[in-house]
Amino acid sequence: MNDSTGVSADSGDLAFEAALRPKSLDEFIGQTKVRKQISLLLEAARLQNRTPDHILLAGPPGLGKTTLAMIVAHESARPLRLTSGPTIQHAGDLAAVLSSLAPGEILFIDEIHRMARSAEEMLYLAMEDYRVDVMVGKGPGATSIPLEISPFTLVGATTRSGMLPNPLRDRFGFTANLEFYESGELSEVIRRAAEKLNVSIDSHALAAIAKRSRGTPRIANRLLRRVRDFALVAGISEVSESVAMQALSLYEVDDLGLDRLDRQILDVIISKFENRPVGLSTLAVAVGEEPDTIESVVEPYLVRAGLIVRTPRGRQATAAAMRHMGIAPQ
Image (cartoon, rainbow, N blue to C red):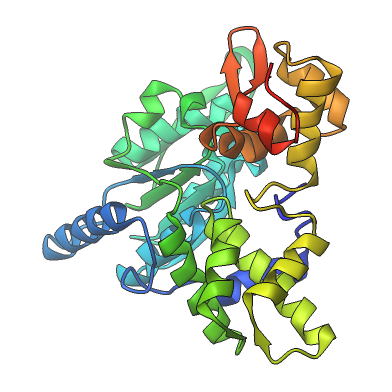
């Protein structure tokens, strides 16, 4: 899947990101309000000697939801269990996870909006009463057996909070809405990553990478990796703005942070469809990408940057997008 840096994520990328994850709220850069809210929630639970309230982390990909879940477990000194919505396709899958939780364990479910509906309904009861009802047998003879589970804290992460049913959303004690990062915060993210990777980089290069990182730390770290590799192969000891620009140009990342797929989407809307409203499915077929990738990964930034608008009839490019693509607005 496209990661908005012009290349695909691989195991090296994942290991790279894992090595750069902050271990505490104090180390975590950005999301100041959310960090304070989570800190208060954890401290209140500690003072009352109870498990922290369930937490829902909502926001676009790459803003730190998984990292925050790990920090919640670390700072509350509790074990962490990681799973994801797509792997929980039956109520039995969830029952197996819940019944094996240790007392006070943190259960992190990524992409929680993609859980099966039957599992969601089981989760309601588990979150509220620490109990699940397991069906034994089939047909008229089937019986429901209540199964007590240990108190736990659920941390759910979603990029599509609107897809969560209200009964599930209402059972979270706290919902954190993560926001895109400002350039200054991203510069600090990149500076910290460069230090950990022993990369010498000047402030102008930091700003250049931050500007093209689409407000997203994950993308900032991956762009830094591309720049680092470029400098390494070229035998350059310190990354300057010029070196960073050459590397980003090689990977087709422009001055707004758009990559090949972004520009292809804008070109299809503007040229192929003459900037008439284009439906998501039609757009996905035209660029050869999955609709979900366009809607959840690519589109949020294009909308935020003022390059496309979503209308009831479909997507349209703005005058700013036309100018960026070198086309005079009509």
